[in-house]
Image (cartoon, rainbow, N blue to C red; front, side):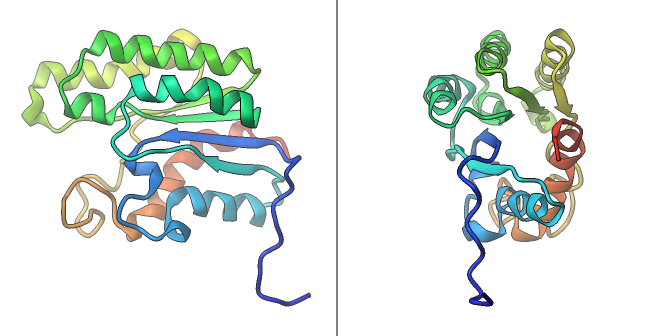
Length: 195
């Protein structure tokens, strides 16, 4: 059947749940060009059965993500949870202790459902203060080390300071940046995938 319509992904396939903010919801972009959509395409091209569920909302903080995670876990029963949250906490200057606690609680919740966790590390520009920015970045490494979860060292690597990779607002990645974001995520995800 060459209808041009892709075959539906098996509903019984293992689920990768992406819990993120605008970086993963594809703010300002068509749905089919986001890194999350590209992830589904790559999985299919490499014969992985996984189904990607995007539970990302623009503007979300770790506190909001934590509130949404348990219902998403119960509904989708994912085998992998990729947490791409924290950037909005940092941009709003929120408590780093709360950031740490929320990320730790998300890891614990995912593990209650036997899901593996991938944590997307973030960085802040230096205008938020060198000490705050450094501690902010350390939180992600600390959570990854403490709970032995996979870490994307810096999710926006190759995007944040590269010409043409950001939309006009200089906050959100462009369509051209999406394959780079996928590659950044893939490095951590691939090791957790079962063929």
